[in-house]
Figure 1 (cartoon, one colour):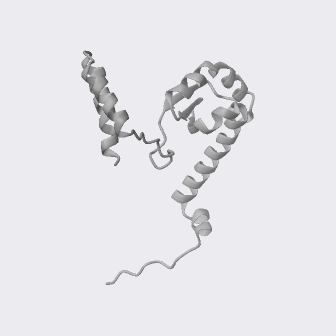
Figure 2: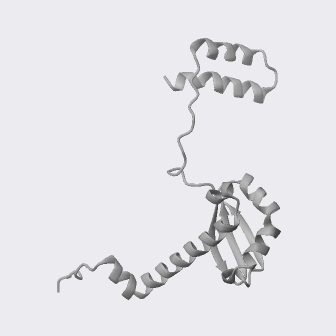
Length: 151
């Protein structure tokens, strides 16, 4: 007996007919709708840093890109809770939880690279030799070597 693959079907048809895919698609649409509602209540600067993770049993879980934004949003938590409760979709909202989850490496903008001239690296190394604090000295020595690794 040989395996015969099923004929190819359009993605839209799969989403309408396959129950697991349909449920997943509906959940994604629901989260997207909740995200738009949340963004309507957030300050413009906070919108890109806060995303809906889940909404169930009166608890809204939000993923925040870093601790700074999580802290800012926690200070605004009561106001945000009241504003969201005024919306029909969040009428039963009882609490908001924030979870910090930095974006994946692919999303991050490339970081700055430090480029030191030879004389700057030498001056930093000379400064490090005069430092008695071991942690500060090690940090300066790493910084002085940074130029060597980027040539």
